[in-house]
Length: 187
Image 1 (cartoon, rainbow, N blue to C red):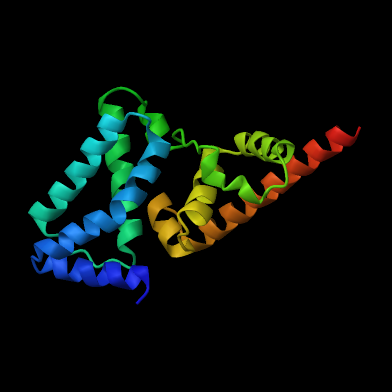
Image 2: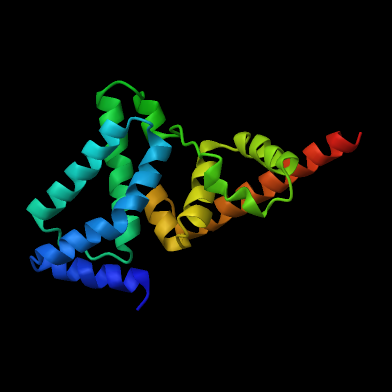
């Protein structure tokens, strides 16, 4: 059984009140929630509180929501919970929340182990830093969280085709920036 299918099965059991299924969902998805949330805020106390609040609300309300991907549903829920919390704490202004909030990736998140040397990975990071926050987010979701376009669309509140186009444009921009960097290096 695939991980998403297992999650869906656990979700259905949780909806029927199965505490063990709910606990298993928490254990399975907690690391992904922490990794994703850490890209939105570095305040681990706030992140932990939001994850705890998310699961508490889920248990108390016994969500009847039918989901295609439990992981995508929870990542999206956490994203908005964090953004609301940051707005309440005046750490972000309302325009940042509704438009293009800060989304950063750590060096490890890009899995640069495939690069041949440090100079190449530095060029990649410099090019990556020049992408928009949305482009950074979609690259993270697609390649680090290994989500499909439907899940990404749900998390980012965009339609399927827009998610495909955004990822294509992000990769294209990244390639262009790396090429420009390489050209400057040879000159």
